[in-house]
Image 1 (cartoon, each protein chain N blue to C red):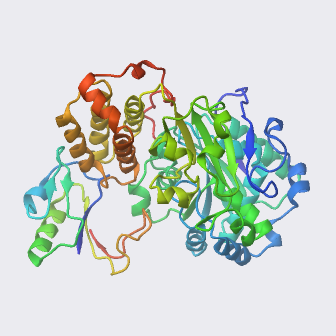
Image 2: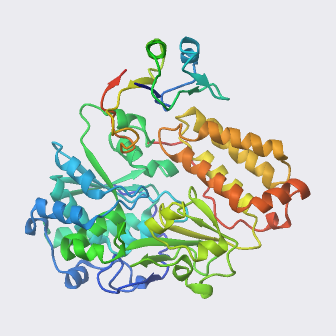
Image 3: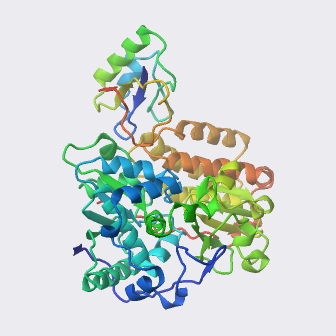
Length: 442
Length: 84
């Protein structure tokens, strides 16, 4: 076991409260309350029982995952069993636990890893054995000190307990938005830049087959292996089984609070009803900073599940539920989010590298009341030149956000064009934008 | 047969738009726009092949996906048959 450790010791542990809806039994965040921090190995084993990879055959784990209908929790929702079967057929596959969590306001991967490290490591051990991987890499962004410390502690406990684990390695990649995308993770781990597309897609002869799965997916593997596929199917929705973690953000009482949803729940319920928000929402930002807007009233009643949101054509993404209050300007927020997404382009693909900054600039002009109808038409032309033309979905998602902004805030667009900037634009930003990224990609 | 661009390789040299003008258009920044649909004639295919051979970044591909796998492939999955 090797541990690459970076970052500063002594960073504050600021884990917010965790609220579980649905059946309180077997869940991702079941167990001791959040303020107690990482669940120790002894407590984890008392609560869930030991399940070593040697207790179950790889075939039975693969079968259980396939039967459960488990889908990846990194955003794309791809069936996990199909990816596992493909990796199992490779010569020497490596399992990658993707805990990069690039979405600036998302905290669910961090909370899961910091509070239930042994659930994640159990899932990794079982998943690795199921595909015949002898090595597991936990991928994090640099500066993820809380996660590194939780992992160090948990891996130490497992060594002392002589658990039959695969070889675990922690890898720290650049803190860039697209660096957590699975092809970017693959590229980084094979010595390339942490950029999506290219190197991973085209493959290098000697590179090992890597199965990249989100940390929440990995933890669910540990629960499916213990409680069976029927357990997973008893939670969530038929089209997207299992519990889901979401993060609350924006004008909520507890930004950064992680909520586990056990069944189909309306957004308003998950937000904690009217007591969970500071004001009735003007609009909701769902799925992440590269997600989609929905009007406050319809968003409040929206079913917060992968299929419920699919029907409303909003992405579940990383499970972000962001609240935009009535005293904020949706156009200005969108301009800021687009500026962030533009700065986070890896710059590999021309339409994304040139198009996103232009769209962000055009949106800022519109928010500032300096754009006419011709400028809005120009924005649509630029969007058309960007969408569908990247090596990854980053530009498409940015255009999706813009598109939804123009329809959800259509009245604001008209008002800004006629009357100039709105007074709400002076309000402090609702969704925090991380500091400008470094140019480091390795 | 379909012409594809690996946009993360393309640097916008524009050779393709000259050599295969009937197939390739350029966007406002000079990056190629290729038809999403199959190439419609042997003339278009020949033009696409000329462009592919001349691309200084080898960013063009001609793909022949079997029926039923079009558009359904996992992002990042390798195409079935690909001429580079």
